[in-house]
Length: 291
Image (cartoon, rainbow, N blue to C red):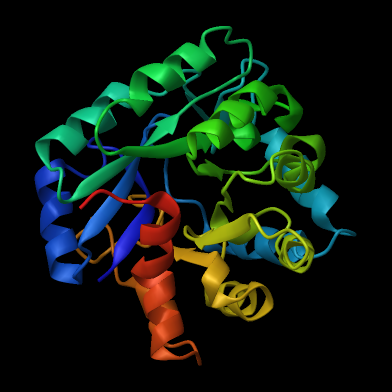
């Protein structure tokens, strides 16, 4: 069993039919989809990604990565890459993912993507979408939506009450205060996207004393070395497989290569039991995926 717990519904880059074909080819049985939050993006140069990955692993050089990130944001909060501007959506379209869950209930589940920044109705949005079958947790993105994580407290409190896990793409400094989130809401399942980017090693070390903190392995924000180091540091019971599809890891036909990150996990020097936990067991337990 393989569960991709971190993928984006982006039919402008990968149609539903093609996605289903690719999933079948790769043997991925379940996918937990995230509504699109931005215009389709160009591929990020590998040299830039490698540079950012290396610098993010140390608290000393991490501010350089933050400075690069800030340079890519416009005053309006959109992304500027290679001379073009790409919109970041304040209100991702949860209806699109809910429709996928309804159309393919045995294949897709969904994250409820919410943005608490300047949104007085965010709790109402949570209540609306959590009642939809297949919507299994909350997605937050303080990195690109650019807010301090403390403003999400009412939303996190409600998620904790409901037993809904939260997948969060952490930002820098107060936009990624994972320790405060986990300690303030100790019964909340917190999953830091992309192996805990931009904190990596610091987050893995801190997680030893934070039992409700987990990570996923998704996206070219990390590479095989970081994925291997993360599992070794934090333990397989805290790690979930994800892809960040359809971003990064392009197949020869121009679509998405679902085998890339899967290969990292298959090559790890871990037990079959640990591998099964990363691929599906942890997702099934933490996300309580419907059958």
